[in-house]
Length: 371
Ligand code: ZN
Ligand code: ZN
Ligand code: ZN
Image 1 (cartoon, rainbow, N blue to C red):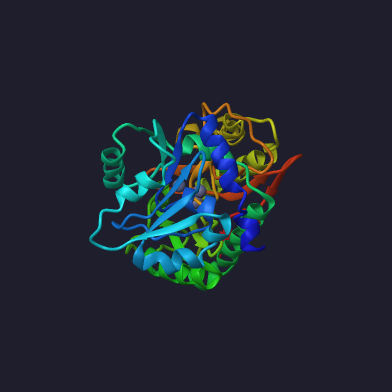
Image 2 (tube, helix red, strand yellow):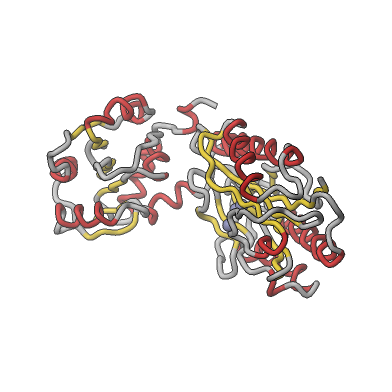
């Protein structure tokens, strides 16, 4: 897929229309996924100001530190029609933001994860402008992935699947979680990711903590091991996949019982995905079979999250989300069962809602993998 397909220049026009419809005069986007979505520029986030000023009318301006001008010019941003303006060290860059606006602004949308020091500096530079979140506008554009974005997510999914397929090379009783994680991280890079976003290797009782990272605790024979890994590809799009393993000896019988429940629940939730069901209904499709088997309280997080240029984004599969799924939405299906002090399990696939059902982007088997 070409970079121009992944980051098509017409997104700026769509963003301007949505910005106007939301009653905002401009978007102000510092480095992050919104800036990248609109311009393709994977900007460095630092104390120097980088900011896309996108007024509803008039030229779009990308303000960059002078030393980063070559990087901005080499990015897809110029092809989207933005004008690049740089500022040297030692000179206040915020007047450039004011100058790039099409007259006085009554309301601006700021990148959702802009640094507080920039939010406050913009408030001082634009005292008459109400500050709102750019996410109000951009979330709706980003929530449905284009075919090129789905292809990029599929490429990321295939890359992380390859790492899971190689788990037997690294995961052995007696090695620590951290040792195994270091090998996994190297493999995540070797499969085409440009960065490792997280590596969870949670053995035995650590598996009961969904966001355990790693530790220096050696993995015991027969201990269930939750391995949740993900990274970012050169495209900007991300992977995220969990499998549960056991090495060196059979897993405990009580674990095998609930693992079977979990696997059925995860498959049921994947199968339930189609346009028209809500995020809450998709969550329930995983939650009900787990609760029916008596493990309801042990499934202590939502069923899934959207994924794209951010690792967690809309839509969320969670109680209370009455938003209907639509073709092009991409998200995780990742129920888990966690028994404090004993062990835990999670199975996670990234899937895309299609016009008539679902496409899995992670395709390795979901049964308990004995190494
Ligand atoms: Zn998580
Ligand atoms: Zn995950
Ligand atoms: Zn996830």
